Picture 1 (cartoon, rainbow, N blue to C red):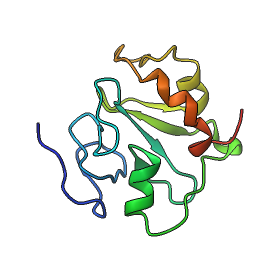
Picture 2 (picture 1 turned 180 degrees about the horizontal axis):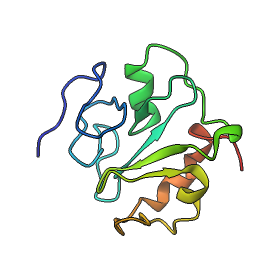
Picture 3 (picture 1 turned 120 degrees about the horizontal axis):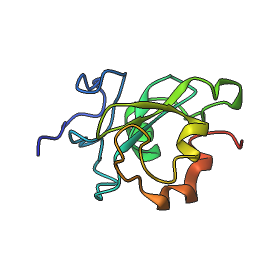
Length: 120
């Protein structure tokens, strides 16, 4: 499986601005690479998608800001399996699976939603 090696360059495989560390073709990264780790999240500070908060910390060069509630109607979650983009509320209501392709999402990510978006 091909992975990016740099965290600073935008990854052009996904159709959205995406950066990360060791990102594979389904957005798994060096930090989270389980079979269900197939999403990337858009950060409010820069509008760039990252597979995880640790990728943002390593690649962005600035302090992370979560996705603001005022922008919940904009796409902020990318399914790495099919490239569909979801709003934060659609992601939260997805039942841990992509509504477009059915790919499973890691339910353990719920533990740290506060690192990615304001509370609904």
